Amino acid sequence: MKRIILIGLIILLLIIATMSLWESADSSIHTSNSSSRVLNFVVEELNPNSFTVLDSILSAVEYVVLETSEESLIGQMDEIIVTKNYIVILDRFQTQSIFIFDRFGSFNQKIHNIGKGPGEFTQPTDIIVDEASDQIILLHGFPSKIIKYNLRGEFTGEIGLPMRFSAFCYLEDKSIVFVNEPNNRKYGNPEGHYNQIFTKLVILTASGEFVYAGGPINTKYEENNSSNMQFGIVDNDEIVSFQPVFSDTIFQMIGYEAVPQVVLTFNDHTVDQGKVAGKTNDEFNQIGMKNDFFQIYGRHSQTDQFLALTIHAMSQELLFQVFYNKYNNEALVFRRMMSNNPLNPANPFPTTSYKEYFVSVVEPAKFVDAKYSLQTSKEQIWEGSLRFTPPQEMLDRIDENSNPILCFFKLRPEKINMESVFLAEE
Image 1 (spheres, rainbow, N blue to C red):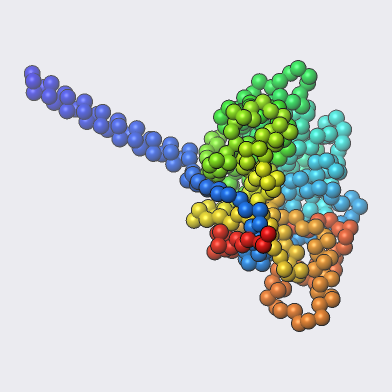
Image 2: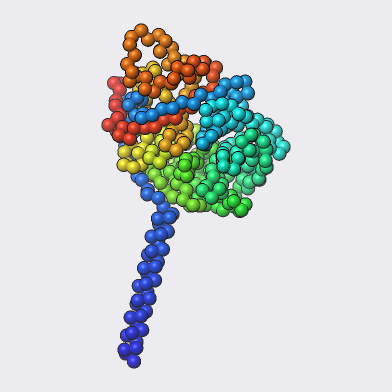
């Protein structure tokens, strides 16, 4: 009898051990699938005299001149989407239009359907471009909906949404993830009707179902109207990431889950939520200045190797640019960009990214200045100074009334560190 009991205990222990191994394996699989490598970037004191040299940090630059005509004249580039064959630009406020160019900058079409009927809009908010399915999807503010067009600008349908959102993006399975911020939940809706959705992310699946994800909204910032001023989600080559306003963490979407990707540690400069809870935008800024808080400002962009973002040092009332190398945890943090080469009009402050390139906007005046410098230089031009100069044919096409130019640039990995930062004399 004792022997039978002993054998039974051994079998039970073996079963428990096996189950434990299965659970451990399941846990390991869950962790690898639901969390990326979390990077921690510690931000020390930010020196207002810090600068870096433009030519030294660039490895490659390409320019795309956007065709200028009466119909294609852009007011403000609020969103830029680059695909294999297209460049699509959203101007939210000045022209309230979507501009469609090919990858060489030739103008194809403009969508400017102002009104309240089907396919029309009054509050263009964000866009998705899916070249494979011949779709441009416009996020509309209020009434909240998405409006669909093809790449020829023709209206193809629309879908109503449960509330107003600030930004959206495609996920890998073609579901759509929407960013919900506290200000969206409380304002911009019919008077007296707050939206009862308290999650940061809302996912519209391909089958038409809504899934609520991304954790609870931080309602401490509902009175702060700056919570709806920046695009919160970006997409580049299957890297979908978002940064909740007033958060020090950038999250990456893994499936339907938002996983911490990069955490900025501000130490003594971290915003004290207890001090700013329920404050208006002006009150928040006053408290931030008094307490020397740092915050991530505006939108970020990233390639596979690099993350680009801006930090607001509130007491200094200054913005600092950050290029962060995700491969080696090195960063380049500076206040000003020094360029002593008038033949290099590149803009190193990106608006978006496409594959391994960051994409920025260059004002036409910088091209005009570069052309003038070439024409008036009396001395022999050093060949190295022409490395990032646009071709003469391209310079000749630009004048002060031209559309902005898109600058596609790559960074030199060996220069993305604090050794590339210098201090100007006070």
